[in-house]
Image (spheres, rainbow, N blue to C red):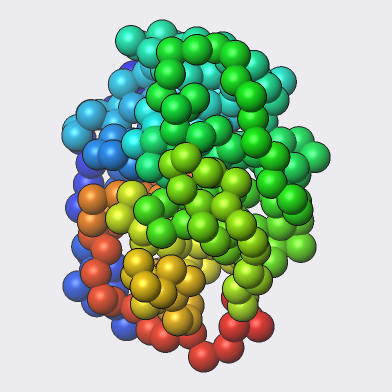
Length: 263
């Protein structure tokens, strides 16, 4: 179990007044969704945040995801697991990254950057054997929400997937979005955040059901750089370059990006 309690830190500078809580511990990946937060550390240990402390969950994973589809993860061998009644159940298939943020459907990418998903009826079943749907194209990171799915490829190009539904997780087509990110995460409410190669944090502005790709990227004005971001229930969960953990209230303290080429 990692330390109890966090410390309140007020960032200064252009975003003075932005309040973040420094969360004790160190993680290499974190995911927030459906009111829960999970993460894994450099030793592949798994943790769940319980308001004031991290509870260690038995098992070893390199990536974990929590959302409407439940809690899923993958280990160093790319084996896939689902958390059922506090126990990890191994399921068929191989993925290096998995996302449970869709409307009770599952998505992810494998070691060759091939993209797969499970429709809702399979993802919420208690089965351990699935028939995955493969999407055309290649991505290293893929994340879904109520207005569609977003991903980045090995060149850090950003893509949006149209017409993804719980009964047709494959969707219909890709649209490249301007900018460059190393990872992108979609919140349960459809918010989209990402981190670029320099560690700067971006939010996609203008997203709605009628405009699911949004309008432009805005740079979040934080004093620091990051390697991972997740968002849920009004909170940004950030990992610093060394694995430090921050919980920040998402608000309007950011500046518009003027050059997408510098993302």
